[in-house]
Length: 302
Image (cartoon, rainbow, N blue to C red):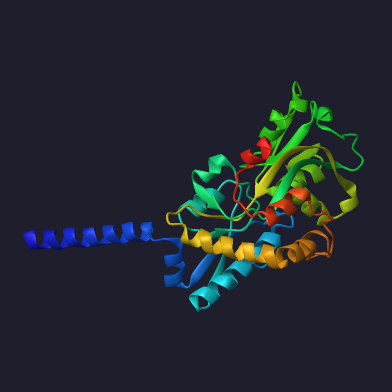
């Protein structure tokens, strides 16, 4: 009997050690051993990350991540199986934290609060939060949102930014939430919301893929300027982040990222061949010229 209990204790201890080692294994080690990398992707994050259906994903950030993975394969001298894991604004951080997602290629703002839980690669896009409305709407600024229904996506910070904006003082509006960006845009499209507050690239991307893009417009003041970056697990040493950063910096240096921006934001994109039509901002140009992983708070100070 004692012998049986001893065996059980040994088996339990071995299992525990296995779990602990698995938990502590770094992303690079995990990828090297499994020869698989899991990419976190979004269904409707404008031209940054979106689905084509049938489990296919594309967009500016998705294609950047594919280039990163190609560079990683060269370093590891082996091919990697890429698995796509759709994420939402609500679950993207937990899925990176627990190792389900190795590299999140969506539309995530790098801020000081999130940096406590995850790490961000160097900034690849600097976003401006704006307001989208129906083209025949009389709304042109924050001040005209009083007593209106304002849509945003659950798990994002856009409405909080709107409330904090000094021009929104004393303005009351009703928040309505979409489970993802496509759902939030549908609230506007169907008339259940008077405005949709979100990152400009996401607004422009959803408008470009709408049934009638001319029915919508982006208006009002810039509510916030935020660095958008590819998200990875927080680790020490940050071996995987270093590889991701080096790959992206090389794309910035040789002009690859500029060509990719033109492809996704200024030229016709799949599946409908519509143009997003967003010019390259000075903030994004600066982020490419001076690669960094500074949080959004640093942009407020400038």
